[in-house]
Length: 486
Image (cartoon, rainbow, N blue to C red; front, side, top):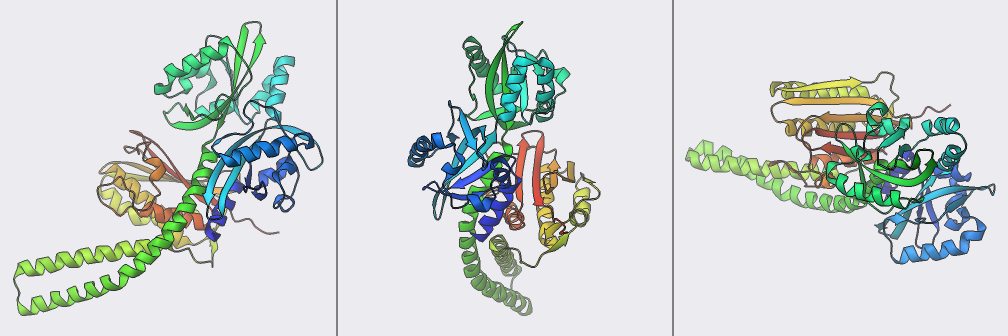
């Protein structure tokens, strides 16, 4: 559980939404930094309190009933769907919120995860649109959500800067286009029907809450979104307003929490198996080596010697698998030092560059200067980079490009990305790539990515993957920056 707590702390603290973890009794188990900022409470004042502390007094009794109903039949859904929700700060002030709920099963029982979004900015944007177009434009341009204005025919009238960044289009390429340009092709026909229904009876509602929605960037990459809808009457008729949130990070939090729980159990089993295997396989390997020496001395037939060599080779392979199982199950040591990640990447690439270069694969690096250090083990982190680059090389075969980049995300994390332009990973395989023994390759143990996942987790970071079939794959490692103490 210590490693799970470390991971949970890392992913919770990196989230841009307020995140609460609550037990079946409605008692707050954990809160992230964003919750402190939203509600004005220190987390020490929240942990151990009932979640109704954050609800206006007039709504607390009703909230208890809603919470009990959700606990009886948990599902991934928005608790506030179809209702106006408000949060209550420590100073008594109230503000509008949207809340999505998820859950995870743990050894200590079911825990519920609430993702809290402050929608005050959105409400101001709507009010400003009705009051002043100029003022609204300024507010919408600075909004943290993508905002798209669509006319009755489904053509895009206006987008904000966040929409450009999210979908990787210039706004000039979007204005006048059908809204469906931002959706995967397989979903466009069905979405046109939903859009027509909304235009016929417009109302303010969270269209995406409770549904699996997907956006499509200009380069074809797909990503999960939530979309809330509103509308406004203009001189040109009714315009729909779509508020789009990229929930990739949120889903990564959920995946990481569930993955950590699974891997903790698998790690214990793997360590036990590895220890049980090591002794008999070691004896077998030693005996085969002695038999090979005796066979050579006694001049036994070459076919016997070949058979012994095959046995020895496979015994050594079992030893290698057992070693990887132990690496997967083992936590990195506690004595950690400041690590220059750029140096780690450079050293790792120097080890694989010659090998990959001979196969026709080009390895590029774009390492940002002046990066902060991270606290950890250079050798363990180098193993992560080696695993990711080697996997990319195997996916490319005999030609292609691997690009390794480093940067800081502005949110306290150092980012390492390993991208290739290979065949990509099928969407149905992506959720399993970090599972032990899962592999899409004809050879290999399927432990490399699991080991990498464990190392990153032990460093308080996260690792995720995105891929487009036919266009390549990108693995992203986020590590917490070592803050200087002053």
